[in-house]
Image 1: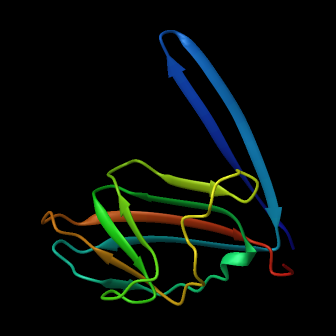
Image 2: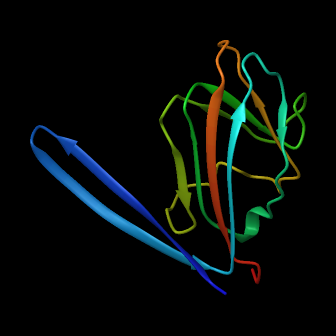
Length: 128
């Protein structure tokens, strides 16, 4: 079975609109929608990823969060998530994937006394 994901880029400035789409297809799809508790430190979301297989990723939080991979105290990757500003990446983007090391778990820290919804989607090529 294959899965497809489309990333839509759109920029609007001074009355001008620029738009484009990138569609990726691969054999594995993972998605998560989790609430990170207020004032939590290193709340675990169970997730495993082989970064060499990632074709497409999307991570968005409803509030500010710190995401760490594999270990909350000595993370392999740390991403500061800004409220409602998604982190999006695809393999042919020409930029480095924000996840640089295989993932064995995701750890979230919320320091603003509010529950935060985090949504994640990963499209992977299990044959890579």
